[in-house]
Image (tube, rainbow, N blue to C red):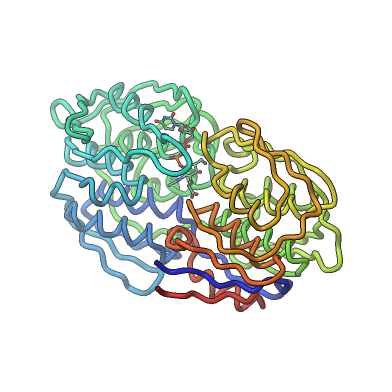
Amino acid sequence: MDKFRIVGGKPLIGEVLISGAKNAALPILLCTMLTKDKIILKNVPNLRDVNTCINLLKILGKEVTKLDTNTLQIEGLVTNKVAPYDLVKTMRASIMALGPLLAFLGEAEVSLPGGCAIGARPVDLHVKGLKEMGADISLTEGYIKAKAPNGRLHGANIFMDKVSVTGTENLMMAAALAEGKTIIDNAAREPEIIDLADCLRLMGAKITGDGSATIEIEGVANLHGCVHNIVPDRIEAGTYLVAATASHGKIICKNVNISTIEPILSKLKSANALIETGDDWVCLDMLDREIHPVDIVTAPHPGFPTDMQAQFTVLNALASGNSLVVETIFENRFMHIPELIRMGAKLKIDGNSVFIEGTSKLTGAQVMATDLRASASLVIAGLVAQGTTIVDRIYHMDRGYECIEEKISKLGGIIERISS
Ligand code: EPZ
């Protein structure tokens, strides 16, 4: 398993180009199953999860061609209804094959994804919504087996008991080809939802309200091909901005959609970072500036993103005072805390909160990544710790951060991949 070897103490200085958003690319790749026509996707991040999703599309019958590292051409009829366990267990987002397969083929068999490090990650809301759209669904041998009576789903008024990003996306895709109108209430409002809706509209779908809590989809008979640019990754941008703040550096992030990172910028300004923004860039200056503590409560967008919780926990550990971080989305998203404590952070977990005593001096150590964003927090900790840090199981990083060691090295950080 690959490791990162990081030598801490260097401020991150320079320019970083932000890649396309993993959490937009995954549903958009899967929505290509809603047509046989050619779809060109640009600004697709070259990530482990994206390559897993490409493999899934190929298993389901799609022709996927890499025109270049970040441009994909997808076409052809989906012919296979089964998303297999061996693949789904490596990427939970595969559950979003359910909606498109049901909508286009009229049937689907998708392995239940199972839990992951950060929580049980149930998919009951996905299933409930599809049942309300007429699907006959059973759970047998670990697979969700679904059929649309007469081969086509019908519109429905669906209330999401909880705000669910991929639940909203799965139902949007199913509704795009359903008979009649679907209303999704208490829908997720993340920017990746809007990017999926933009792509579906380019394909001929009739969708309004995306980005609000109520999304309306008027089903159509067919969808066609399109060319779509994946929205920049707001979490990747936020991660580099936190790393620059923690290391007292000065960076400019390019290819950023500013409106999607407002919740993150607001907290960074409270942490005493100087921030300037342009059309598609953000400059953060933390040279010789003290880090102020910021209290965090994660929430669905436009609240503070849970995917930035671990990164801000590290920043708070370095701050000039105490703070409190509350995780309201997932039940087990503190796996990074014991590792950070081993590096000298003064953290105390109490239920879904962590109390952080600031002004920790972190020291390098051997630590282990447990999930994607926890691993990002360990890399940030390594970049600011005294001495050398070895981060193990960095395949978690490769799922969501494109060319991370190249991008950090270009900013002056000392990081190298050790393949073992
Ligand atoms: C998406 O996961 C993201 N993944 C996650 O990013 C992100 O952390 C999460 O949304 C929250 O923003 C992708 O978009 C591929 P949810 P998702 O359904 O859709 C509960 C990363 O690091 N729930 O919005 O799986 C669930 O347990 C990843 O990039 C149900 O109870 O999350 C959680 O408590 C990690 N039943 C809450 O809702 C359901 O059927 C929100 O989960 C579905 C969800």
